[in-house]
Image 1 (cartoon, rainbow, N blue to C red):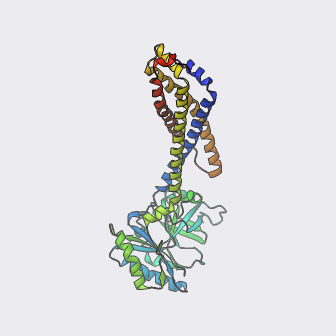
Image 2: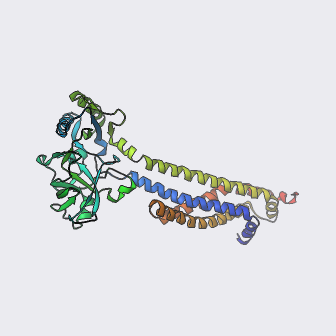
Image 3: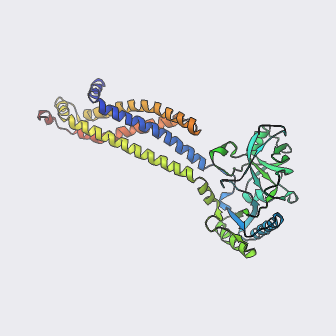
Length: 409
């Protein structure tokens, strides 16, 4: 089919052609960036924590009444003993926080005391000699804490443990040669020695500000004893998570009723923790998906409406072509080609808009640069959408009989 007659016809319908092309361009620009955002969010919310998530739950315990740090520490140790004694519980540990909690203790790590700039940021976890086993994380170098190395710490005390365990991500950042065990690093409270390296342990926050040290964590041999209470991380035996979650608060209240465990979020399985941590990412992905569907539907409706209008205007011309020997297939191809040319013009402008929008998002919201894969996917979607949308009115046009050539306009 010759393109020249189609271009001549489009020049006679400049307004409609321009509007549809711009609608396709804008839809392509938004859909490409929306698909990219959805992919980024889905990757983010599926990031591993390093924990045995199916068998872990957390208990937020708050004490009633005032108590000294020594008394709080004694209560915590008693609670942990109670939890470990439950038949459905494999292990338990007290901690100041846990991955995906949304808040906790962060610190800058230095290699030399005189450094002005931190070598890396890191999430700080307080844990005893059961911390690694309770969370189900893997020790890949060095050793675990010994029970005699675990001490109590008040929130006002300096963080200066003699030994620590770090994640592989932090060890690689500090000591790229892989010899972190036995090396000295400096926390805010002073020097400490790395005695072990664990494979993976995600930080407490999933927000953008913590992305730089998402897997750079430090475990210190401490129990944080504060009168407000703290968190117990509990690992249930395989297949007994529900039983352990029911038994844990009951056993704790029986041992010491002077406590508060909130009914709503005082005890959470790790699946609930993950769901809450990534609620905004999941919501954003759903919103972007809805926007894509709505925009594509509006664009398809616009193509159908304009093509149907053009078919109505050209019935006599179509009838003349049919009378001169054009087949139904010829008429169908004409309108399909016409729409394809409009779509091609729209996607060219849309590619430029997509890149421009992404550059704006990069500068304003620190997003990643748009991959060309998403641009190509968007182009294919819009071209297929255009051909699909024009098919019904094009088939109606192909059914116009030759007798229409003899009818008055």
